[in-house]
Length: 207
Length: 64
Image (cartoon, rainbow over all chains, first blue to last red; front, side):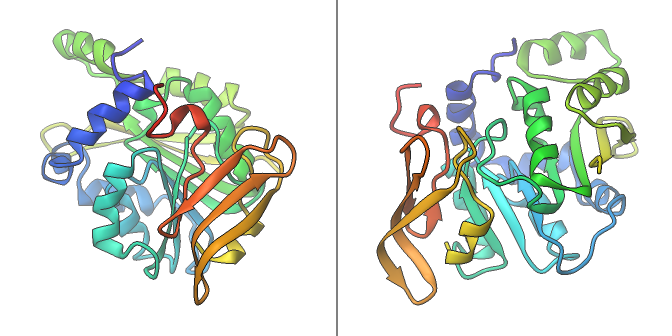
């Protein structure tokens, strides 16, 4: 288990990370990658979209180019403070909730699209969270997850194993199947200097 | 939070419906209140308009 796969440690880590997150974030997950991921979705303006682990709101901002309202959920009040500054806390286009990805506070069949980017690597039980994504998304709806691809270099592999969850396409296959998805595809994404740094999976929710 | 959110939220623990107890309202916005699970009785606060639907073991004040 990586050092951040303990929720109270993750919470403390994020309390400090939130101060610099948007400055360091573009190195691993940038606007081009965000646009490429959003382009994988079949999305309408009035769709109900959930952003799990919305954090400071980087993906939320991209999603708002395509939809009128986003439902944002995060476990960290400190990360959310940054998002409140961007979009407004209550009267903006985002409905914010504090909540846990593995125990979502939403009813089944509530969302057309369930999105989560840069969050799965901190989930202690990713299959549980993916099952929750499937439960709250409508049949025929889409679940899109962006996570860190397992690195090729052994130095980074050791670092990756120590800190958090990284996974390759085979592991992603296993997790999505175990979570009850049948129809899904993986896309690797990244900047020119590291074109496979992220793995994006788009799954269609079984009818 | 707005009241129509009640249509899609539920208890994160047992997924049953929640009852809303409003403490303070500002036009359409519920600013302070409580969301109480109709099954297990767990209470989730609404603070400054934001519903805190974290399970009790993950709340800020919990030792976790």
